Length: 459
Image (cartoon, rainbow, N blue to C red; front, side, top):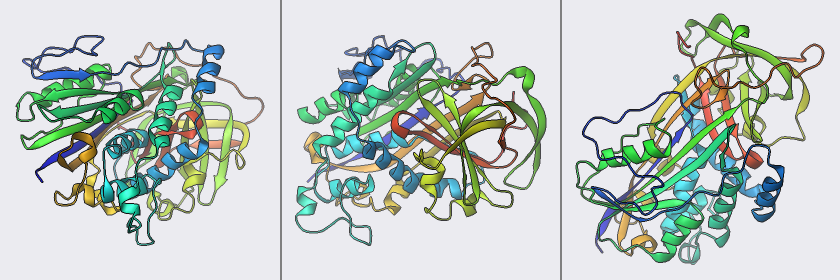
C-alpha cells in the first residue's frame, strides 16, 4: 500500500506582537474566506464560527449552555492529557515556555476521526479515551480493530467549542482548525463533515511541492489570528495532508492592574541571576489554595475564564514541584472543594513568552508510536490512502500586561481595581519562577506555561 506523510501543526496565540508578511507573498485571503480560493490553494470547504454573543448577554449564554451540555469528565480528561504531555517539558526547561493543551487535543482528536486499528487505539489511549495495558500499549485482540473515536468525542469537541467561543468587546476566543490536503487525494465525506461541524475546520487542496505553500499557510494563520502570530511550517512534496490548529485569544482582567501601581524590583531567575524588572501590583478578593510545596491563586478574566498561578515555596524548584504527578490536579485542576476565598495582594511581572516545539517525540514517548511509523500507521479513514505522521508542531505567544492577556494596545481598557475589603490574607509575590495556566469553561486548559525569567526591560 502506498504511504504518504501527514503532519499536524498546532499554534496558539496570546500576543502583542504584529507579524507583517514579506513582500511578494501570496495575495491576502479574502473575507469571509469560506469557499474562497486563490493562487496556490483551493478552499474545498469552510466552517463558519457560531454567532457572536455580546458581553454579559446572559439570555443568549443560557441558551448556548442548555443546547451544548459538556460532561465535566470531558474537560477533566483534556486536563489530564495536558499534564501527561506538557508538565515534563515545563519541568525540564530553564527558559520560559508556553503551550496550548486544547489546541493539541483538538488536532489529535480530529486526526483520530480518520485513524484505524492500532493507530486509532493508541491515539484514543493517549487522549484518555481508549484502554491501555499497564506498560502503556493498547489492549490487544479485537480492541485494536473495534476501538474508534466514540460519537461523543467529536460531539463533545463541538459542544465545548460553542461554549467557549467569544468575539465581543471584552473577550476573543477562537479555535482555528484547518486541513491542508494534497491535490487529487480523495477525502472521506464523513471525515470532512465532522471536521467542519464539530472541529470547525476549513479544508484546502494544495500542492505540497509548491515553494510558496509555507507562505500561504503562514498567511492563513496570520489572517485567522489577527496577524498576531507568524508560523513557519516546512512542507515537502511527499506529504499529503497537514492539520494546522491555532487559538486566537484575548481577555481582560475583571479586577485590574493600574500603571501607576507598577513597581520596579528584582526577580530571582531559574539560572540564579537577579533581574531587575517591572511588576504589576494590586489586590482584590479571589480564590487560593496552600498545597504541598506551593501556593496557588487565581486571577479572574472576562467571560468566566481564569489565570491560575502556582508559586513554589521558598527553596522549592519547578523541577522538584513537577517531579511527580501527585499534585497536578491541585495545581491546575478544578478544586472548588479545596480552595479558600479572601483578599489577595498580587505582585506579578509583566512578561511575554514565545514557544515553538515539535511535540512528536513527546507523544511517541507516551505511547503514540504507530502513527509515526510509515509501515504501521493507518489513517485510511481520512483519504483512503496510507498516511503517517511526520511531526506535531505547536507555536504559541503569550503575554500579560495591565489590561489582561492577549494583544492589547497600551491604550486598551483595563479592568477595575480594589475589589477587596480589609487586609489581604495572602501575598502572591511572584519574584521567582512560577507556573501558570489559563482555563476556560469548566476548567478547559487553554494555556499552560512556566515563567523562569521575565524580560529585563519589559514594558
